[in-house]
Length: 105
Image 1 (cartoon, helix red, strand yellow):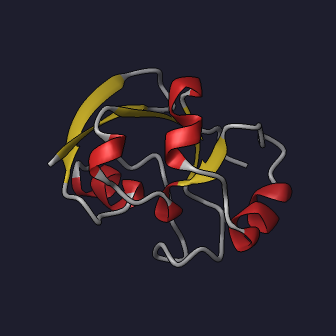
Image 2: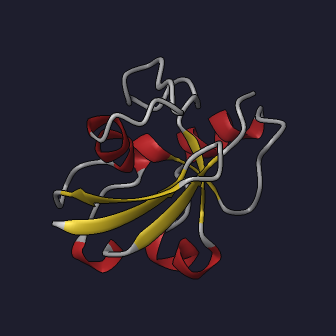
C-alpha cells in the first residue's frame, strides 16, 4: 500500500492508501471523494479527472502521454503540473504522492 495525499476542491487534505497498480482515480473514488466525475470510467477519453501533481512529485509521476496531453489541452485550468488521475498508476516510488483536484471546466 502506498500513501496518497489528495487536496479536494474545498481545500480539505485527505490521506488515503492505495494498492500498487491502482490508478490515483480509483483510490480517490474508493475513498468516496466525489470531486472527480470521471465520465469515461477512467479510460482516458474525457479529462474529467484532472488533477495537479504537487511540484515535488512531478518528475516521479512522469509526463502525460500524448492522448492525455491532447485531452488536457482543452482545459482552461491546465498547468504544467496537470495530469489525469486515471493515468497515474500507484507505485512504490509514488508513496506519499500529493495531488490537488483541479477546478471543474
